[in-house]
Image 1 (cartoon, helix red, strand yellow):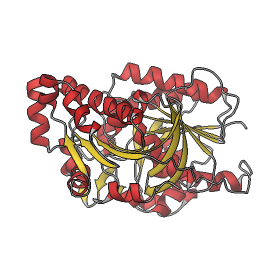
Image 2: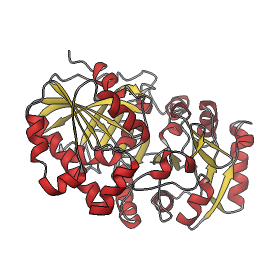
Image 3: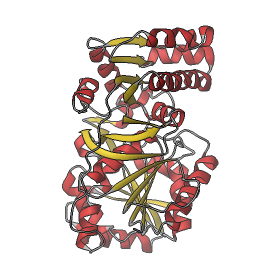
Length: 420
């Protein structure tokens, strides 16, 4: 079947977040890790390609995104979606804006929207300003993000240095009037050569109105939530079959391992709770630089059915390690260690993995040799269980964005995926 909707995600947790929300509607979703090497004989109506380009140089991000777009276009994608984090984390140079402009050129779009709102997870946009819960972005824990600290909450100011075209806003007063008003305002801005439009959204109803107004856009951009209404709209247009796809996955039996590299406030709370539930091992970048990964692997060898390995730490500890080792080396040591732990555990019989953090999820899935995921049931909004093959064995993966889920998420995830 040709692809109706093709999405490009800037990291692996973002891709599973999007795929899980789409699968809620009963649409068949295929999640591919990286761009496939060649055209495939089978494609799903909704294809999501997970890249690892959030923190790479902008030119590299653009090249990989364009490669993904070429594959999706060859598969027949009618609409393209550029998915980035609902906290809009980026630098002044990108990569949100540069990738969006490149995809606009390649799809022939003269205008696109930017809507990172995800009300179910506390992300809202009002008068162009992004809020995390009740806090402006720049006053939330994102201000101390180790790779992309967010020191401004205004999306127009954040996006403008990243793009060459004009940036505008469709505010909440317009959105509340419904799809026709939104489309009229977008058309008015287009006549003024405004190519990049931030759109306010504070409720799920806002997202439905925005998606309806933009249903025929060649390119949409945003967090995953703005794509939630699209399957219904596509069914209304006769593009999707009426029946729903069964998204349940065959659950593998075997040990379980939590791997956490995210240092978000929520993941810190999740690690603290799960440490009381299962054996845990803390990774210290300074110790990894000195001793390597063998102590971690020796510890893992002796564990039972459930365990956790984590590098999650508070901002002060992260800054200390980065000052001693350099930001890139500190991050690379942790990612490499968690990836080695995943492969070692798989080879010793672990079949269920919960992974926290976008960079960590990318490192782990790549190390496991995963190229495609079957999307199953959601554990929490934006976090589904997925199944896949890794070196000839069937495993289950839950890839969690740092801020998603409640503090009991890890135990909940494993409880909801008990093997048959």
